[in-house]
Image 1 (cartoon, one colour):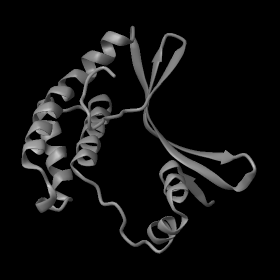
Image 2: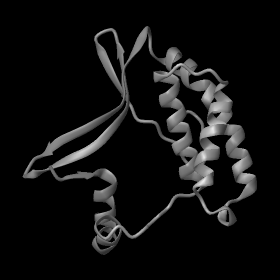
Image 3: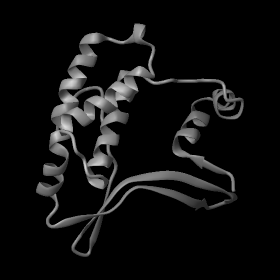
Length: 158
């Protein structure tokens, strides 16, 4: 069944022609940058820490994933100082994922991670909304939905 994701809808709202070129005609649009590479790597680390047995240190896990994401980008467009800072910060953040969850939630368990959604769209019965839920934690009789986010202005509790 045909579906649409939030990012596809966002592309269409930005410019219907851009949507056509990138989503229908499959012409490459935005390829990513250091910030998206950082976010993708950290997101992957969070998921792995909660769903896999990890045999290497958390900072090294981040470093591997961030290196893989950086390799996908055009190196001449990268700010080397920013990349070095991101390696340092990503390593520190990766060590805080599990302790922060344990500190915030009492006696919780991972219910689902990276859960795929296909939901009907009211008024558009021929289409489904496609999305992913990053993490669902069960705490007693409550479920908490977590959406991992990074940003370009800093990495603090906000």
